[in-house]
Image (cartoon, rainbow, N blue to C red; front, side):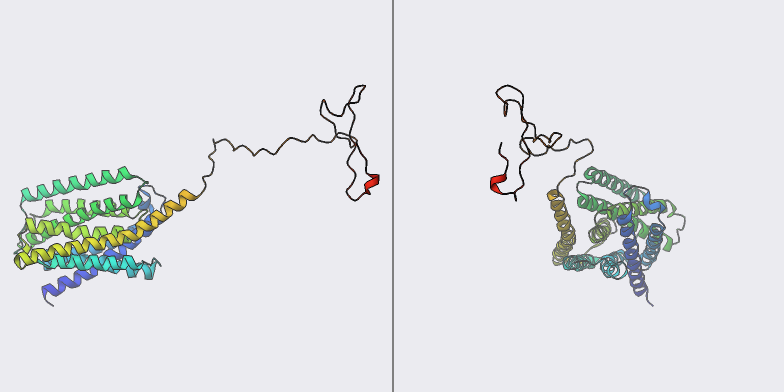
Length: 350
């Protein structure tokens, strides 16, 4: 088997492992109590971590055998594998809009990165690695703080911001992984050890951010965002630092721009289905009457008219002051009304 074919095979298996890990992560987020450290006490979450670890290991080996411009677009197949796997194993069926968005985003992203012309691979210098780590780390922290500002008021927007940060972290981990693979392939085994710390930090940040992005947003939109942002970040670095360029000159650059717009349109389709469901839930919650809180006063009862005094002992009904008095003083009592079925001539009159 050639190195290119082995790289493709490893990338496909890696995408399946990533998809399985994402499905488990989403289920853990949906069934959790919302606390930050709740997933750490869930055995299923650690299974998702193991699956992501397998996917990352296969991704590293694929990068060692194939170019970055080939391995990264194949990673975009994660969202395509995740939709049928979620429907088969956990009964989470995606709508037609989500399917169209997944296919559109994948085709656009594959077209964008397929037009990237990979030059000879080389390792990044120490200054380039430091600059990339600082810029990407700062951007990830800034996005995390922005997401915290949304809180629970806009769960979908919060999820997309966190997924964008996770995609940036994963993409930068792939860039540094490619650098280490090139260094090791040239025989410099100890030169890549400091970079391994950066890979571990960005991979861990991406895992935790992606886990947080699934809470309250479902599977498709966060996973699609991570899947698109990850290779886009890697492609930008490849174009600027690895010496890669678009094929076919100006026509290739225009085609790459069209493919990027196609991928963005697919991402919009993926998120629109969830946004519509969220808006419908908000409208239903607004129409539902609000239950009174514990400190709220009970609403006033409607006026039921004048109060009727209770009958006095002996069957007589007392008359209020000023009505029914005898000329000599003293109140008289009104006898009870005769039954309705009594003859009219025998009814008692007051």
